[in-house]
Image (cartoon, rainbow, N blue to C red; front, side, top):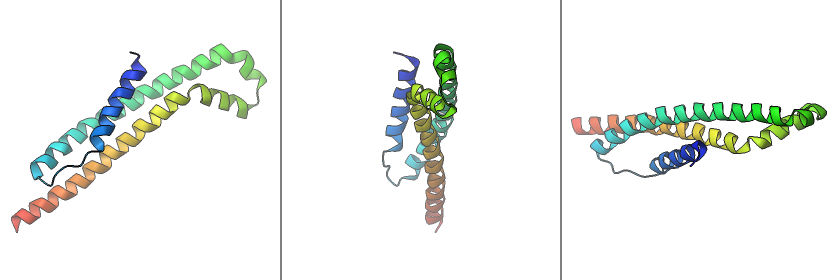
Length: 122
């Protein structure tokens, strides 16, 4: 299995976790908040790794296709490179959205936990 496949599988696992609904128990909320913090950090690290892989793929396209690229207009050259790295671009964007979802869900959970604490206090 390639590194890209490993990253994609890990992203799928995190995505699946983000798509589940939890009960309204405060213990489950705090456990989920902790897990989201881990996934937030992990998805950021994976995203950075994919950006590096994409940059390497871009450099490889320049190396392998330099004779073709110099004959193209800048717009067409950019499209050629974007097309050659489309899979990595999509994975990077997905990881970006996973990272944002972790952050938003953590914010929402902190609000719900505060609400539950206040409700228990009353």
